[in-house]
Length: 375
Image (cartoon, rainbow, N blue to C red; front, side, top):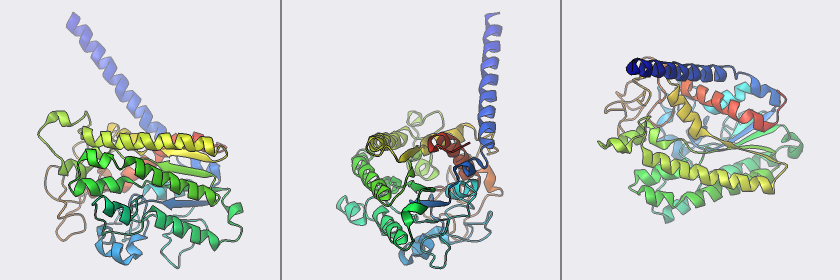
């Protein structure tokens, strides 16, 4: 009798959890077009490969080394290589579309129309300068276009606009995600998590300094994204995989790496809180990429992702996670999965268009109340 009661309780709880997850998924399916209520006429993006729509492709150093300049990148939606590190659209593309605006053109495209905003993000970029990283014995040969360089481009762009202050009243700025590559490069070059952790305060202050510069240019609505749960990222799961089951959490993510990401995010959030006190008339919003990604993992099946491939790369080869750092997506002989929309990870580092779509919807729902738009 007692066993039957326990079984009944278990079934009730299971059904409740499933219904709750399905309901949560349905809620985010209804977010289309909500950003149109904000009436943004321009969006400006700074950051790295999570947001780059083609700047790296146009840089001699970056474009030469980037795998994102090769097929099969862009096979979805665009059906050609655009410089986006995905099979198709990125989060910023979905945010622009949900705002009723065209996709943001890369600033480095000299013939691009920037009347609706511009994208300054560069794949591989860091918050810290190349010189600052070199002092920490972290080499950076991919691109020199750190956050300070992107901010210089942004400032130059505004100098070419008549009455820029008036035109920024209805603009949205995204400062990041940036700062994550410092940790990726450091860990990839043999630094311990403890060593990388010491960089967090400087990285956060560099980002905050960048936000202050954007405010100085006239920005009044700014999103400052945090880092992903990097212990869930395919490349990290491959590099740091271990037989110790205690190293993984319930989502099969590496606990220590996620702890590093949370440490960074906590410092960034605290800095944003302090900034809000100094700039009460500026809307500053923390972009919670960490919890958006966890939500994606939790609801992967109900969102249409293959439960057996949620942490495997779609475009990749070899190993438990279909990822090999020496034979990455775009290299000769590296295959692509039949249906990228069933995968969260595109190439082991970046996400698929389908995953970015759901991330964007979660973030829009999370940030919209803070944007003070008429909904």
